[in-house]
Figure 1 (cartoon, rainbow, N blue to C red):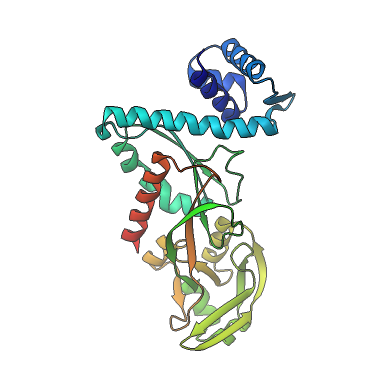
Figure 2: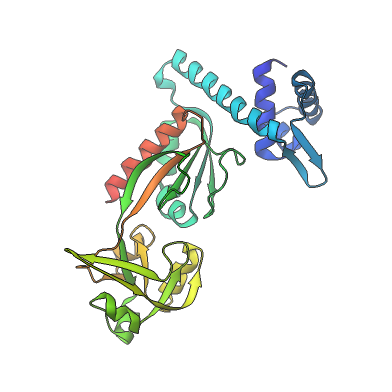
Length: 295
């Protein structure tokens, strides 16, 4: 097995977590995968994987090798594509990570056209509200919202969205409709702990007001927030992305339109220290175009 093939085998083992799964992906026998990894560790004179009853875990050296091996494979693929001509499109696997609700509403429904444009490309979409470690999870690009706390990340801002106070018409019919921030203290709110918590900051012209809202329901996942609001259990502050279908249909309504909340930024985040692959860049451009059309 040549050096590039050995690196590809190792990358698949790390991404799938087992020799057998990597063998299925490569369409070879499991013994061949085990032998390739053993030969690789012998050649490098370093342990790349820790084997236990719970599976395979890359060592620190293994993680470093994984990152560079994956980059080498991607660069080789891109060189092949460039030699064949742009008409062949993108190929291989693209691993993407996005928040659950954002991915479900704004990414999954639009994957078909992107795949049609690139018939040799496969997408592995990880929907997770956590900020996962991109290298450990083998992610090519993550779509993250809000403020990026890690200044060392390689990131590109691709969109921003308004935040609004919203609720169902049934809730407002029963409890009345707030017209200013102070009115919110008389209402029951559903608090999204990952989206600002109970402290909401408003502005209007040169005036700023902050309010601590009352919330008996606190959730840390957007899907839970959506269900609570749609069940008329309170109003909330959220991005228009999170309730896009319901805002369009009238199932929820935004209020206090003359008051503004801080907008929500969307970032494309790439593994640190690595040039973004052509596949990742093309996908980010595609998502950016989609969101511009939705705006």
